[in-house]
Length: 163
Ligand code: HEC
Image (cartoon, rainbow, N blue to C red):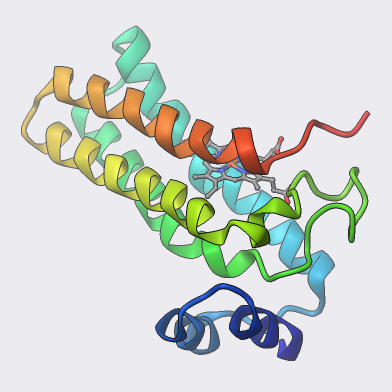
């Protein structure tokens, strides 16, 4: 916990954000636990909901209510993501098998944060379009979320899968 807070403050985070980290983050047993937790959030909170929206946008499956709920799920996940990346919890400090996070995350935190904000903003737009029963809006915002959110972050900051 102390390491997490120190990392957040010493790193690139602004003061207000550091206090958010202190207020809300659970006490991680260690960095292995925080790595596990963020991958879990990516799989369930992000990808799980992403798939629901994709099924609608690409194959016309599911309802607008499903889409709205899933989009809110992505937005909520984005709100939890950043504190799960304390400084020094990527490659090469941890093995390629354990994490795909690249050290570049902490060298260019502003871009990392921007991609996360893009994911949240486009997810919010998807929820809004779904509530208005606007399928074209959902599709357009879904495309932007994939491009600027997932892609905008994975391309620069996520390394290849360990073999
Ligand atoms: C702000 C950056 C960022 C955004 C935005 C982001 N990801 Fe990720 N994602 C990562 C990083 C970094 C990892 C690697 C985590 C680790 O292994 O420590 C990751 C890991 C994952 C994983 C875990 C499995 C794996 O192979 O690494 C999935 C699934 C995933 N992301 C899906 C998505 C989807 C879908 C979106 C968009 C809706 C998304 N992510 C948006 C940064 C991001």
